Every structure is written in structure tokens, then in C-alpha cells.
Length: 493
Image (cartoon, rainbow, N blue to C red; front, side, top):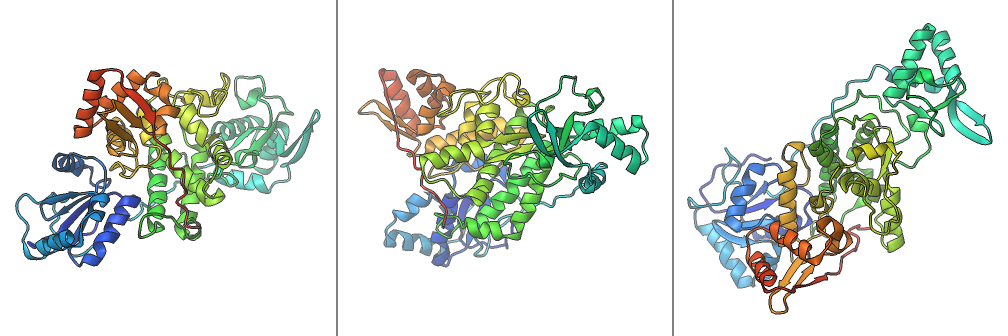
């Protein structure tokens, strides 16, 4: 975050997060006013989330103050008359800050006119895996080719016997050493079985000599991070997902229009930083997943899902109709820990505990699917408010960490429910209108209207809306309806 210069003059304070369209709109609105603006990123400074919520009663961003006067979000700014706005500008220019000014990060003072305070990307340091050079040599060897087994052809494959012979002849290994290396290549997911699994305990040595293998990068699938070798030693899953999410989020922010309404995905794909992101995403191929805790699984797959959506937009374009959306969520995928995960697999298979998704007739993972081991034991309804931010106010979190994941998810739900395009309470009609998300995944929230409304009430922040909902529930026979969902694309092309 940019250092602020000392000043006892007035300022506008805007609490925002990187990549938030509504925050970008607010900053664009404030820029021409010619007054000092202090932009505080709440994702970068989570210690300020609670004080800001106490001051405003809200957890969404942006939240804007003129000196000590709380204004609200971008909609409140837009509704001001020119006279009201000019009065506020005059106050900032002429009146000094008072002791009750909204808080800044510790050690910072008032700024000059600085709007963008996005942090720089974290550097990725890779320790090369010991087998990476061997795999590079293997790719240049003559043993990889087309092999037939029965009626099936296996392209870019090689047999166990040919691999062992190559290791012994070209690398000077004895038979036992070659078997160990073959097992390591399989264990570290540099290579996989071509076709059906063989009947064994998974040990390379137990496979018959004519068993066919492929390098993982040559296994036929459509994953966006396939086609190259992941040469780094396997990284911690949480660390890698955080790096990927922060890098793609920074890219997204750089190509978000000044009015916050569109994203230049074409420019984003040509940005050199996207090439760095793509190279980093390759390292997901061999990341270790089976040892992840519930909290680590949640943080990892939420971050990866959100990054994969943007990567999918860059490769395929944003879907614009029902068929394109179905294809997008069932096709766009990453190769993670040796297995392919589509967006549907991540959301419904892992994060929803292997439940059927919208328009799905079966569970994502069968009983024999190795990915089933990663599915959460219990569905976590809060994930629905972390996987996207389509509401008019975003939660003050864009990347998720295992240490605070449950608190972060509750905050995301509170922020979502503050929005009128997510929850509207009509006390007079005893009606509650909710986002389509609650209709699509009603089973996750209890399965009945009564349980759904109780869940919503429990996860609301204290507000007049929550008081109204309590009254509607107390009166009994509340009607539940669902609001239209905005599927419009934010692509500038």
C-alpha cells in the first residue's frame, strides 16, 4: 500500500478491495473533485474490517467518508444533488480532520490525492524437482509413440518394459533402480496409466511389462494448464492457490474499466503478467491434495475456482446464453494433483460434498472416482457467496486463507445479504425476495422455505432489514419468491 504523507487537512476515505467494480466506479466518481482521497484496501488490511463495520453497520465495499461524515457506497454518491456534493467538497477543503476521523492502517496518516493503492504481485520462487530433467530427456527419447492394445490406439504412450530398458541403457541404472524411478514418476504424477487402471495396488513394479503409460502433460484432456511439465517440487496447495488468485486478481484490476462496468479480457490475455500466471498454474498439476484439512480444502478450491473462471473467460470468452454457460462450467478445467477438475467438479463435487448441481442428473464423482476423496464430508452453504461477486456491493475479501476461512465466509455471506439484488424484505406483503442462488441450491440451506429464511436471518448483520425479516417470520406464513439473476457479460469485447 502507498505511504501516506502527514496532513491535518480534510480527506475522503474510501474503504475498498482490489478488483471490485463498484469500488472502481466510486474512485472514478471522486477523482475529478480535486480533493485528497485515501484508498484503504480491506483485503490487504483485514484488521480494519471490524472497525469499519462498527462505524458503518455494513461489511460491503466501497464505504466512503468525507472527513468524519459517513456517506455510504457508490449509489449514495450518485443520488447526491450537485449542491449536496459541492457542500461536502467544501467541507473537506476547508475543515481539518477531527479525532473521530475513520481509521487508517497503523502508522499511516492522511494522503495526498492518491486513488490506486494496489499491492505488487508476490514473487514466485521455484525449487526444481529432481526428476524434472529426467522427464525432459524422456520427452526427447524415441520410446514415446503410438501403441495398440486390443482395438484401442494410445498416442504419446510408452510401455513399462520400454521405460525400464531406457533407464538402464541411457541412465546407467540397474533393474531395481529403474523400478524405483518408475514408481517415483508415477507417485509424483509425472506420468499416468494410459487407458483403464491395471489391477494392482498402484505400485509401478506390480504392473505387467506391456502396461502403457503417458506423461501427465500428454494425457488427453482439455485442462487449461496442461501441455507442459510442472518442473517445480510440489508446492503447498494453500500457498499456490493464494499466489494464483492474487496474480489473476491484480490482472483483472488492471484491465477493469474506469467505470467498473467492463473488463478488457483481450488486453488482459496479452499482458505479460498473464503468461506468468499461466506458467504458475502449470504447477497445479502435481500439487498434493490428499493431506488437506477441511479449512485448507475450502480456501484452496475457492481461490482456484475464482481464478479458473477468469482464465476460462480469457481462453473461451464469457458465456452469453444458457448453452454456453452449461458448456463453460462443465468444460473449463485445471489439471490439479494429477486429476482434471472442471468448475462444476470443484463447486458441486468438492465444495458441496459431491451433490448434484443445477441441470445435473448425477453426482460429479462416482464411488470409484479418486477425486471423491477430496469432497467435503458436509456441504458448506457459505461457499455460494465466495465463488462470485455479482451483487452491487462486494465482500471485503477476494482471496481466502485457511486460518480465517470460516470467518471470511461468514463475512462474504453478510455482505451478499446486505444487497437489495440478493435479499429484499417486504413487511407489508409478508414476502421475502431472494437471489436465485437460494433457489438453485435450496437443499444446502435446509430444503424448505422456513429453514431457508431462518438460515438467512442467522447470517445477516444487524440492520433494519434483519429487524424486518424477524417481524415477517414472527407473523408466520412468510412468502418466499426469487429475484431475476443478471447473467450479462462484463467483457468489453
